[in-house]
Length: 293
Image (cartoon, rainbow, N blue to C red; front, side, top):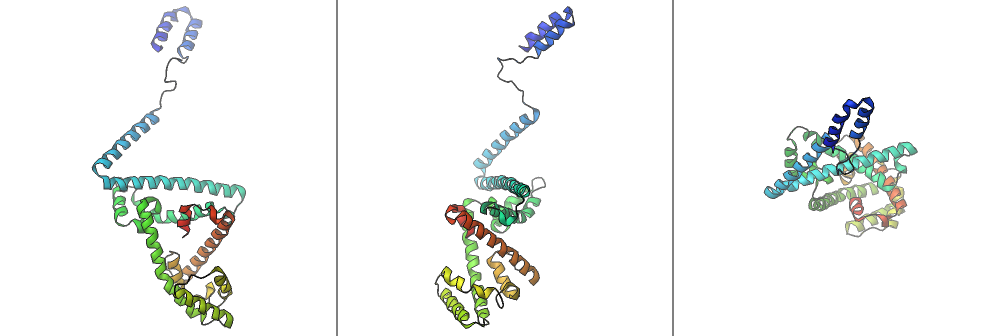
């Protein structure tokens, strides 16, 4: 059609400017019989080619190196999930700024998203920096293989690893409970109020024998934690390190830093608990329940 119109233009060029103008307009009218109304840009063509080559590369890895392909696909999916989380966090922060909201005023899921993303970024930053140079991502794959739990965030774990590492973290936390309970028993001996002291001793003894405490029993001794010897400002360095390990915070810091981090972390958990109650525990998904645990 374009060649036909070009030929027509050549035949009328001698007819004057008016006929030439009419021909030019005719030449640039869209061809309604064509299936390609809008030609592709160079970037879209290059992007399409890159996706095609990447798909062939992944098929080659899956066929020739299945174990490496598992690591590769996990890394790529994890990176996409991290980018998705970043977009969601950006939206949440924009909403906070627009509505004048504080962190503790957010719904539970938004609050948990900000908290988890911050922790993920802190843990993932060294690995992301390592993977920047060309072909350095292969070194990241080695790290994924040998040190996945220590160096990588949950996005870069396989489903099997996620289940396994949750169990490992739970067992590590259980090992610290004995130290925490021993510290509580020592502190309970310094409680002056006799009924409160007796209640604490009985409760700690039951826990040592495998009895799960009731909520009412825990609430009955909360007054002991509002002042000496169990308030946050009275804890010694050993007690703060034990609590830090329970909360998966590094214990290898000076006492003042440990105390500040514990206060901040406990306040964050308190705000999450309030938001969770407002949402309703029954509304939590299975994945959210696993993370809470």
